[in-house]
Image (cartoon, rainbow, N blue to C red):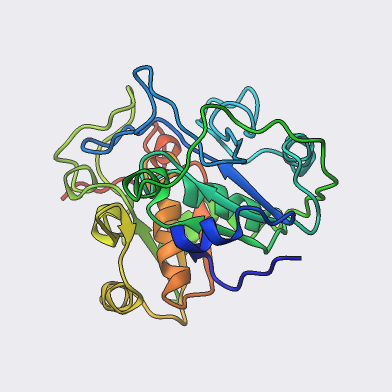
Length: 282
């Protein structure tokens, strides 16, 4: 078994271990909706890192018939779909995306929520891999089914009721990964019918502040950022527009040594709907 003890690996490590039978590589790309972030795949272009399989949590490995985007599915659905990708109980999983560091942290957090510890994110993703002129292929791998077993821990993702309570607890901090303009209610939300603004007592940490050149910033830089917002004794709940970039905050916090972490799965796509959930505009 190939063991990793970090949530983040680099391209050289991946190339050195690509041939390992215990390793499974998953492309977890989702089309970006944030201005300035673009996929290297698309418009007739496609490349995959050799051996990669497609982990589509936007359309496949998600809760069916939900009015909210890419919500975490049941452990049964997750297990069935992941087995189709040739993932076993002892597999070491590396997730990446075609933007750099955008959609892959959510895939990492999903596997962690489902009880799989041996999973990490490729820092810089496919763009960095291509920039370094490493080998790519033109199609995904088609593996034999695996024996993966899911064991859901409900503490990894939380619902609006938990968030609503946490907003007023001194030992909890909600961090919002959206842009400052969306957080303040200056820019409208991209989803129709969703209110502008933010949760009371939440703090804004745009996910872009945690990135440099498509990669996660250094541990020292991350610690400096988080120290100004919360403490390692607090529970940190992250939120964003739909539960994707919130996981970038969660990954960064984990790398910086924060352990009590959760992601609000519905995020602003749910909270911002017309209703009784409180919204503040600066």
